[in-house]
Image (cartoon, rainbow, N blue to C red; front, side, top):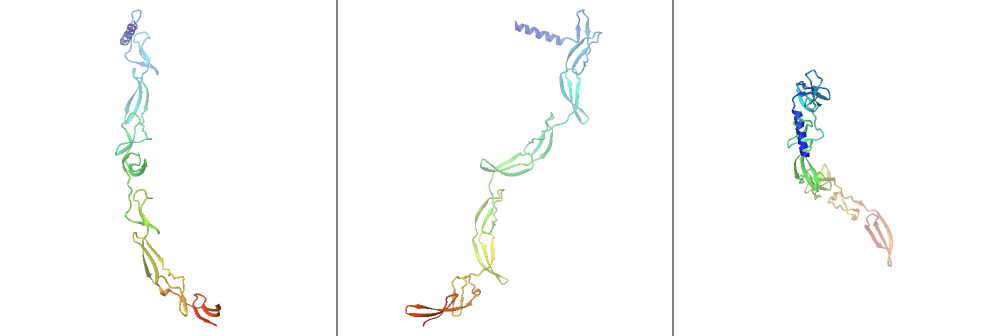
Length: 283
């Protein structure tokens, strides 16, 4: 029963939509209506073309949007799908997502967010740089665009070092040539060859590292034994660096004393600086 009732309703709706733009009145008069639409801000209808004030097909506007060109300008036009009334016309302004980049392997750009999705702005080639990043405890050389961040390549980083030595006063090493400038290779203390060099009458101790180019050059300082050497007239500290001409001999400064050695009294004359005994005899 319900299904039959629904079929009747559907049939009646179809009949009413297919009726021509004429209506029959109870008195048998057949109204006639305009083939063009009348409308206001909210509704549209067809006005009677007979003497009556009847209207047909009255209904709310059903809005849609279309695009129209005027010269080089694009307009967004809102209109009614039924009657064609234009409800608004605004100059279309393309909008773009400037907060995020679109990209491919060669270029980047900002994509349109309006309906013109094929439009792009700020289209440019990638500007590439390679930076080492530590990811999961592994160093990676990642080549990517400095503008949009598009990653072109990623390879595991291998530290590289210069073949030339770097050095300070104490040690030498091979510095890193990759971005890890704090890393070194083959670090170790200097191993010196020694040479005594005379220049313009001055002596210099020259220490040259056998591995790197470091050279330590200092004025030569003569070295002497701590114990005195002496003869009858002088005493001195022997030179330990081989420069005997640097030895400064000084005359003895004598003093004397007596002391008891068992049953004897001994007279002794000696140098106060070096201890050289000049005279020793019993008295």
